Length: 189
Image 1 (cartoon, rainbow, N blue to C red):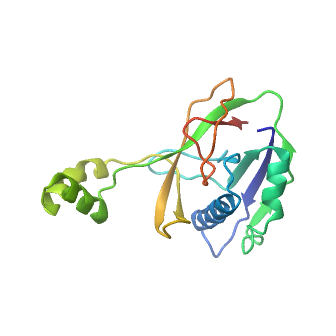
Image 2 (image 1 turned 30 degrees about the vertical axis):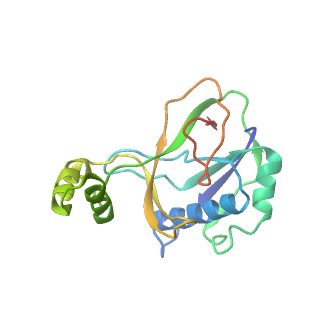
């Protein structure tokens, strides 16, 4: 992970930043899937946490080896987004940086389909499953998220993103097709 690309949203009076970052991230997900890429990570350097301010920010940073980032940018995955983003040139990662894991966090939100599955698995009535799931769903989630569509199922969902604690040493590993990992780190600067 010695290079990176910053992609910034342009201010747009017609579309909220949350919609644009979701569209951008969905396109990136499809591109990473099509490339079978497990060596490109993402981070959101301007993310904000907190119940009232949970946003990934207006900058998406891609991390990887220079050749792999060039390969990603050579395909037309940004079609339809070029008017909404500014893509900076591939840059080397600065010399003195920290590292952190950027991972997906899933929460039990008590959706009707989850309640139904819970009821079937545990042999309880749906109403009981909904009641049991109310408490976790009532808590406020303070992590930033993006609304995305899954490449495999087509379902739209909120992808909650957690930027873990800073570390002094990098950890190698694989990234999923959202550019996230439970163990591999990305440079943080």
